[in-house]
Image (tube, rainbow, N blue to C red; front, top):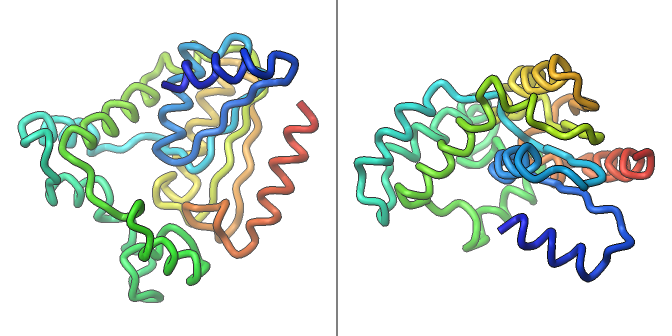
Length: 210
């Protein structure tokens, strides 16, 4: 689907540079996509990504034996259950981990397209995508284009910056053109944080530079 969209846009705007941006689960998709189809892209940005999850294997196993079309609370807990632990003493919301901006959390909670439970098959695909970009050979398959990693230091998806640094180091060891920007105190949705304009400005400056 990503490749179809890219080819469609390149046909309509062949004179423009084409850049992939993926956030969160979308960053897993984008990382896999760039490793497979990245030739010809001008650049790529991976936002709010993960360095890997030790529960990925058991998650895939549970998802593979569950009813594929039903939501499964055990798999949801395995995937997201620990994310709010650091924030439950400072917020009543189950989604405090996404942003320190209470208005953004309220909008998230009220949005029917947010917060719903995946089907078991959806979780299988999530775990499978993460496992593919967590393999040792992933970074070596990336093209030689500028790439940017951005995340908040209070983002549990990226293990509070540690997982994102692991991805950065893998890319560096594979001699890739990569930069890392961690935002102190920001949570998962850095594009919806209190100081989000700083993030947008940094992204724009980086895009201009490449």
